[in-house]
Structures are given as C-alpha cells and as structure tokens.
Image (tube, rainbow, N blue to C red; front, side, top):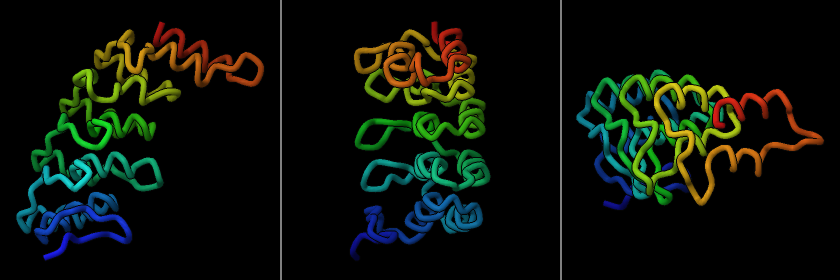
Length: 181
C-alpha cells in the first residue's frame, strides 16, 4: 500500500487509524482525534518528517486552527509531550512557541513539557520571540533565559531581530529586557 497523503503533503503513514489520527491532528479536529484513538491509533505515531500528532496540532495552531481540544485529547491519551522530531529538531512546545500560542504553551507546560529541552532542540524561549506573554510563561516554568542558541542569548536575538529604536515598540522592548535581562 502506498503512503497516504493530505493534498500534496505525504505523511508517510499507511496504517488507517494512525493516518486518520495524523490527519485529524493536522486539521486540529478533536472528533477525528477521538475517533482515531478509539480505532487504535498510536498516539505518538510519527509522520515522515518526524512530527507526532501533538506536534502537528502545535504547528498548525499558528494558522487559524484551534488546537486546544485536540491537544487535550492527545495528552489524555498519553502523548509524549517532550518527544523530539522534525527536520530541525523540535518538540510540541517549541512549535507552539513559534506560533506564539500562549494558551497551548501553558497547557503543554502544565502537562510536563520541558521549557529547556536538550541543546540540539530549538530553544523554546528563542522560538517564542517576540511574544512577551509566551516568554513570560516559559521563564515562570524555569526556562533558562541565558541559554545560548545559534550563538545568541534570547535577549541578543530579540535586540537584533525586533528592537528598533526608530520604529519599534519601546514598551515591548522594555518588557523583553526585564524578562530576558
């Protein structure tokens, strides 16, 4: 059987229940997630790019999908919140941080997500920039504000990428300096 796909994206998953779970997670469709789990899908099945259903939910949360119900079902079914996958190693937390989804970041942290994953994985604090609310959640959960990632601390990355004395947001800059300084 050939690997199934959604549109032009091939997930590389042949088992029907596992594919149904991955597609439901990709679409942040909680009823599909429930159905697939009831049909015996593996909660941490990895697609060809290494993303698990929970990682797909986190990744897709940034483009208008509501991830919360799907994420709750996956976590209740035992999804590994700290599983590493993807071409640039990531976790569901780092993906949720990239999408600046504070509600999902909070849920993942409450369910044991590591705010400081192994050094080869994207740094959640760096990924969360410039979202001060997400950075604050990570710092409160114990993230290392001085972690070096791609040769920069998060504050250095923020100052290089977002702080603009002429056109920037001085209030946000001050908040980020307080959080990361």
